Length: 302
Ligand code: CP
Image 1 (cartoon, rainbow, N blue to C red):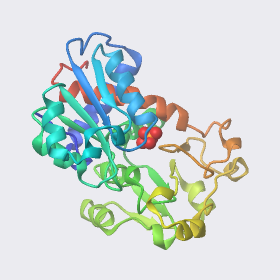
Image 2 (cartoon, rainbow, N blue to C red; image 1 turned 45 degrees about the horizontal axis):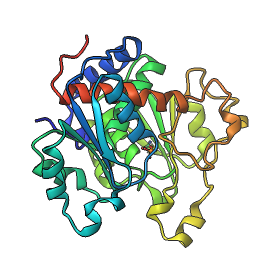
Image 3 (cartoon, rainbow, N blue to C red; image 1 turned 90 degrees about the vertical axis):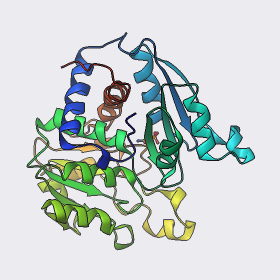
């Protein structure tokens, strides 16, 4: 029973293997790999990409899917605990994919589930399957996962995708640049981990300067749902990427975003060669196929 709760649960070798498998599956579909499996997708918090790409991944590997997109319509509303919910769903399905607004919710479910639990995002904490598709996308666009200048922009405090991604990329020798207002700075536990792994990181004030040295620019949304409204209004619209700002960027630079975007990437960026966020979202299907295959102990294609 192998749960995927945090990127810290995945060794560098495992991450590398999963990225390779995901890239392979993108080119070589495996419609019967999970023919006899049933995957439960339990989403207590809104999602478009993560839930639908997990479900697409399962269906396109031959698995069946059960689940819910709105936790408010489940017995959680009547007070059922996460522990009991995990016990019950583990009796129905071969794997549980869970998103929840509480940090640590997936970890709690994993402690009471007899089948693998995959964290599809818990509060402000972790989003490991997003990290896998992000690593796949970085490898696909740059041909490697090391020696890159990674610029992380926006809400680095509450953005669980950037926490997981920075942790994962610190397994290789990359340099990080953080572009964020002080109240949305990267948490200490992440910078301490970068220190431990010997990865350089810099807090950089000028967004344009950061753009020009980047191999990857990873934009994020300011997470309105995690803020007091007055605080949110003070920082809304601080970093807005427009096509005119890309005149001096590296030719290989690609822009990523976990999406949804609000106003942080102007639509005029979409048609530039640097925009890669829609292909990144599509990669979610292949990365999640690799993850589901791995936790269900299926032989992975080479
Ligand atoms: N990137 C991401 O987690 O998107 P959703 O919230 O739509 O799942």
